Every structure is written in C-alpha cells, then in structure tokens.
Image 1: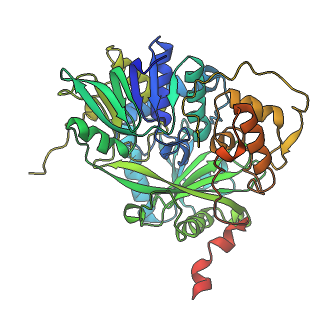
Image 2: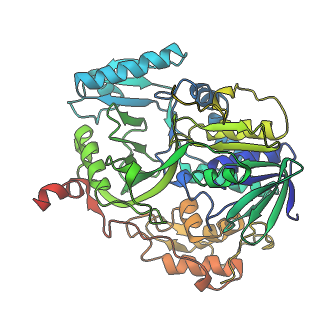
Image 3: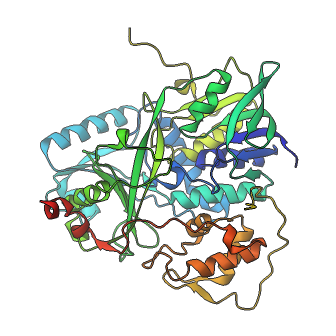
Length: 375
Length: 109
C-alpha cells in the first residue's frame, strides 16, 4: 500500500484503532498515523478501564448502553484476544448524607434515561462487595456496568486491524490537513504526505492543533490523569468502583492487581513537561481515598504509578461529527476522560460515517458547532 | 537510529524455535516464544510488549528481564537492541504499602 487510502485516521489510540478495525472489516483501505513510537500511548493506556453506563451524561448514555448490549460482550471473541471484560456491575459509594444526595441525583437522572441503576443501602453494598468499610452507608448500583483492560483493548483493535491490512505508521506526527478543491484530502506529517478520501481526526488534545489547520476549533483543554497499580492480590471482587466524591475509581484486574485512578485536585493546572510524569502528591492522595473505603487494602503494595494527558471538552462530552465546511473531514475528540467505555461504539459509528452510511445511533448531540456564547 | 515506523513490514511467518518455552520474565512467567509471537502480532516497542504480555509488570518491574526481552524483540525485528527504547521506569522505586505511601503528609510535619 502506498500513501493513499480510502480513509486516513490521525491518532492510534483506542478510538482510532477501533475505527480502523471496523472500516477494514467493511473492506476499506486505511492508514493510521500515530505521533508516539508506541500505539495507544495517550489516554488509551492511562485510564481506569471502566465500561460504565451509570454516571454518564444523558447525551452520551445511548452510546454506552449500545456498547454494553451489542459490542462489549463479544469483543474478545471478535478480536481473537482476551480483553478481560468483566460485567460485574458498578458500585458508586457514599459515606455521608451529602454523598447519598449526590448519588441519588445521578441515579434519578440515569433512571430517567432508561438505565437500570438503583440506590442501595450499606448492608446490601457489603453483600455485593464484602470488603467494603463499615462506614459506607449507601451506594448506587448498576449491575450491567463493568470494566475491561484498556491496554489490551487498544492493542487488540490494533492487532486485528493490522491483520486485516490496515497500515499503521508510528512516530509520525501530523503537522496539518490540506484541502484540495475544498475537500479534506492530504494529511501532512514532518516527513511525508498521506492522502485519504476521508480523514478522521482522533488525536486527543492534539486534535485541537490539527483541526485548526482547516479552520476548525474545538473548545477543549487537557488534564492529567494518574493511575496506580498494586501487586497481585488474591481474587477478591470484580465490580467497578467509584465514589460520590470521585476521589478514586478502579477495579481488580484479571491477573489480580488492583488498578486505581484518582486525582489530587490539581489536574487542570499540572505542568506539562512534554512527557506524562506523575505528580508526587497524587498517588498518596489516591491511597488515602482507597483506604477510607477499603481498609483491608492498606497492606497492598503499590508497584507502579503512571500518568497521562486527556482531552477535556468544555461541556464534558466528545465531538463526534462531520465538519460541514470541510467535506470528508470527521472529528472524534474531546472524550473528557470517559472515552474508553464507549470506544467500540464510537469506532463503529465513525466507520459508518466515513463510508457515508447513516449511523445506527443519533450523533447530533456531538456536533462540532454546538458551542454557543452564554448570552 | 533507524526506527521501524511502518507496522506492515514483512517479518516472514512466525516459526517456532527451540528454547521458545524458556521463561524470560519470571515475575509474570512469560516465555521466549510468547515474546517472539507478540512481535509478529505487531508489538514492536518495549512498551507495547509490556502492555501486551505483562513482561516487566510484576514485582521487579522488569529489572531482571528488561535486557533479555529487548534482545529477543530486536532479534525478531532484525535490528540492534540499542535501537529499542527501554520501557519507562515508574515510581515508586520499590513496592510500597498503601498505608505507607498514603502517609507522606504526616511524615513531613
């Protein structure tokens, strides 16, 4: 394959790889350009692995529910690789009355959108997960939620797409997109030029810089996400966890380690050194959060911490949209830290958009031109 | 450095070799054959191998097997091990209990 393809995808993260796979399955030729030397080196490898429907914005919920119903259960089989998907439910925990109020509000919203989620008392939460602290007085419970291994999902899409002939180029930073006769056509990198009938931009925060080369702006910023992992523990529980205060989230993975993400409160203003480094105050803060809810984990040893930048859209839902003034240009960015759980759905939708099919779900809420001034 | 950027390079078919059942990463029990196979599955960097197979993700964090894995991956790709970046080392330097790591404020006071 030369430098021309039916579709050129900018960004080899979980969204770009999923789109590449579904496009290749439809018989399209695809080139994926990734800035990093490693596939999936942004938010795709640096998240808690939640496959959640609860706690989502109601505009995003149909994407999550579609994925949980139609794509996640068969994903390992389809990609011929175990992506460690567990559908064991999501507990969002509360310890005070104000926590319960937050959870109740989230639950009411989700129920109104048709999701099966309900409030439970501390006792029932401890029946579901006996390791919880006695201080937990209630939780929201969504039994159809779950988690998967984000590293493996990202690589599984890559592997399968590559087997289907998708050309992945790593270490290839995109400088800009060039229009030919008003249509997005050429993707220019530092060393080369690629051409596609359609160009999909799924480059995380870098999407802002690249989209600006064809005159489009997505109002987003970046935030640092930190994750820590413990040494292998005996199998304990497989629910996805979160808290009303959002002080940590995580789960026990297939090989026994607990993977927890969390924040210190300085995520929006952390210094970008050009490389995703962990802040020394964050991991201890996450540990304190975890021990408040799971005192039994205080002896568990942390073996590794890592950090990465995510793209945060101003209204916290992504842009998944054709750009009207630049035909052949599709944006998929601004996932705001919850793109992983909906990545199979989004990949599938992008493949439908790129070949001109009508999408199976309504994506009008994710338009790139939805941002209006406040007055 | 002549980094391999195009992931569709032809490496020939994967052929089993004697020694493939040798355990290379002892913490996570990953064999030489599994590492070689991973390269054929498209995992070209130390970071990708690590995420795909869990080499160097166990207690020693790759301090024992890092060099060996690198040599096997480079051999499979037909490049020098010097051309492969090592996987990033991560804090903490040694495994630390949650109650100790979470106690840094008290320590400082």
